[in-house]
Length: 125
Image (cartoon, rainbow, N blue to C red; front, side, top):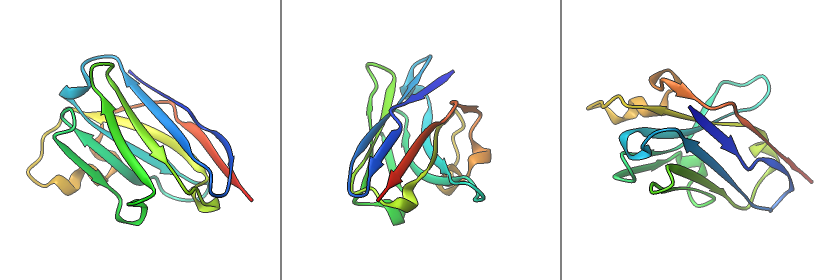
């Protein structure tokens, strides 16, 4: 099971830190953050693979969003800075134990086997 938390309402330019805690050893998984805005498809944000062995951020979010893990606590964080109105979405964390040669598979929601419940982030002016 995954438990996502930390969402909320923030003004443009503000920051939030989301947490995703997994029941199990987080270093056994690839853990991804995705987001979904109303009327849009679920979008890859970032992933932390095998306890931080491989970190990926969506190109469009690099520099503002940072994924990190405290794998002693089986928790992965998403630090979001300089938030924009277009960052408004439900943010989900997901996990898979799948290991693929083609690492681009981790950009796609269907690759992940386990999902948290989502946490709402609302950015307003």
